[in-house]
Length: 96
Image 1 (spheres, rainbow, N blue to C red):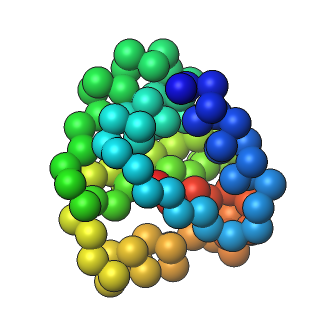
Image 2: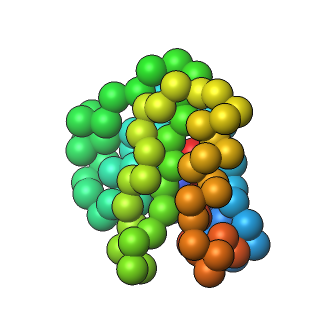
């Protein structure tokens, strides 16, 4: 499963603009662990509630967690996307 998630992320990096993913929380816990270069088992440390917003991105080409387990509201989603530098918009930002 982890290798399939990495393939999905690599494909997403070729797209222009933000990418939204919807899945079960366990999938995202594995995804964030692998995003940060951690082993799959480290995903157990990233708890997720139902219907929350998490945003993965980059800081100086280093994979980061910009937002994790945030309550989902359209306003918070727009604020998160608006704070991105223009150069990051096309290739660096991923929404999970």
